Amino acid sequence: MNTPLSTGPAGTARQPTVALALGAGGAKGLAHIGVIEELEAQGYRIAAIAGSSMGALIGGIHATGKLGVYRDWVCSLAKFDVLRLVDWTFSGGGLIKGEKIIETLRALVGDVLIEELPLAFTAVAVDIDREREVWLSRGSLFDAIRASIAIPTVFRPHHIDGRRLVDGGLLNPLPVTPLIREQADYLMAVSVDGAAVEAAPAPPAEAETDGTPGYRQRIGTFIGRLMPHGGNGDAPREPGALELLTQAMDLMQANLARLRLSAYEPDLLIQLPRNMASPYEFYRARELIELGRLQAREALAHWPPHAATSS
Image 1 (tube, helix red, strand yellow):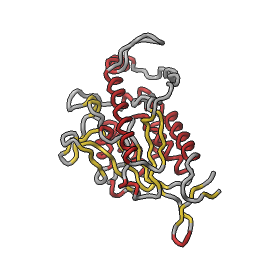
Image 2 (cartoon, rainbow, N blue to C red; image 1 turned 180 degrees about the vertical axis):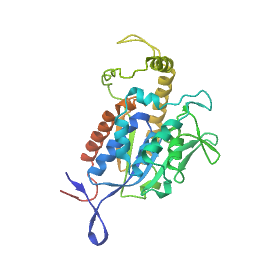
Image 3 (cartoon, one colour; image 1 turned 135 degrees about the vertical axis):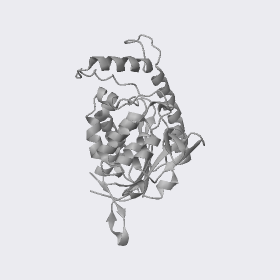
Image 4 (cartoon, one colour; image 1 turned 120 degrees about the vertical axis):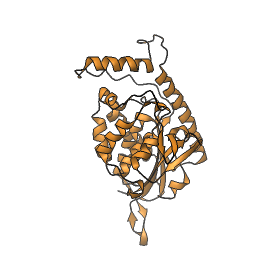
């Protein structure tokens, strides 16, 4: 493998640095893990991260040095493990409180102040009342992450300093900006809202392992009202509310990301198709991480950096 080199003081070689913009996308954003691991395997050092929604979650956890811990945990999740992390509610502006998943991650990774992280990190959220994006680069890491992932109507908004904050992907799903470009040799962006490709066959149904059929039946009935209805093969069906919301968010974010990229082009764009998974398929973590790794490897293979390379 060739390792990229940059020139340091007195002509010495040093590890090139990357400012990384990580896009929104729910479970699709697990591909960011594979991208980060591939960048580091190829000799790049990540010096700054700006993330929106799932990009903020993955980027923030990487900044703590605990991405491997999170990766192993999320790869162990089955479908109903994901459901057990959901704290349903019917008040406060969202279907999900979001407290259970954030407290689980706090226990797993440990919370820190963003300004004490070893690299520059920013989580992008949206102040829904003032109608503008907010860049969170100080304070509790998991407060910032919780605000950035607050998908409207799905998660309750998160309050920080009197502001009602929601998902950063609402206005800025791919936070490429000169502000982070100045902090590294290269600006790279990872989008999981790329052009759709022909859908792959659905994975086989997961084996029944839980011994609580009553609980599963109740959850299944509730989810059935939100997710798509209808049958098999070519039989027509109407989308459920959650599927329709997901489709609308995907379309909005893909178009907003294109506008951002046209305004400020990164040195390298690593792009994955928006239909590679639904935003809620966290149980497909291993597959999605590997897709990110392979896409990063291919993009880097066709992108010789301006710096010299050495075997």
